[in-house]
Each structure stands twice: as C-alpha cells, then as structure tokens.
Amino acid sequence: MNGKQIVDLSLFTRARWEAERRKGEAMLAGDGEDCVKIWDKEMPKPAREEKACNQVRGRHVLVTNSEKAKRIYIEMSVTGTADRQGFLRNANSGRFASLATERSECTGTARQGGDLGWLSKDNNPSKLQEVAFVTPRNACSPPFRSGSGFHLFYCEERR
Image (cartoon, rainbow, N blue to C red; front, side, top):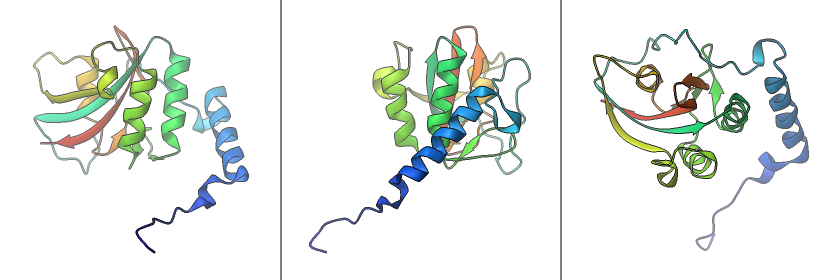
C-alpha cells in the first residue's frame, strides 16, 4: 500500500456517535444500572485475576466537582468495557493521558498526562493509593472522591 495505513472509518458514523452520546447522557442522568457512580466511602475489592503487588504505575485526573469527573469517565467509556465494579477494562492509555493533559486540575501532573510514576504500598494509604492497588492493569477506575477533589485513575503496570 505504498507505506500508507488504512483507517477504518466505520467507527465514526453519525449513528455510532449518536448512540454513544445517548449512552453518555443516560449515564450522567443517573438512569438505572448504567449511571456513573462515584466511590465515596466504600472502595472496591481487587479483581480476582490481579495478583497482589507492591507497586503500581499509573496516571490520574483530578477535578474539583463530580460532574467533570463523570464526563471524563464517559469519554473514557468509549475506549473500554465496564465491568461490574465500574472499571473500564482495556481502556486506551493515550486517550487517558490526553484527557489528563486537557482537563486535570492537578498542577503537578497535568502537563505529563497525569503520570504519577510508580506508587508503593504504604501502611497508611491515601484514597488514591487504595484505588490504584485495586485497579486492574490497562483499566480506568470509576470516579472517586478524596480530600483534594474527584479523581480517575488509570493503571499502566503492576509489579
């Protein structure tokens, strides 16, 4: 093909876009099981297939209100499949990094696409660390609240 890459444009049809928009609006409205829930007090349990680890490498988005966090989660839901606990499995890390750069209000990590580097387990973990260690590899967490605002976390690697 002379070094040219073929792009499948079937994903970008108006019908697909409308279906995703309606799905997103339903998630924001809080209609039924598909609504976006924010983890506030009860944290999820680790996925069975994930082995215990001592370090997690990931990215995060920090925003000041729940509405912004929900909208970012909905945008990520196009790239991944939600499991029962709300983790977006096989989510696109590049998309997460660009959303972190564009929308994160974290002054320390937004320019680096929300990159947190390697997080180690502590005896007194923060909410971010709690979520980081239960998020499966290549998955985005649902929005959760901490003392500094609302976060989403993307797990890149575990060791």
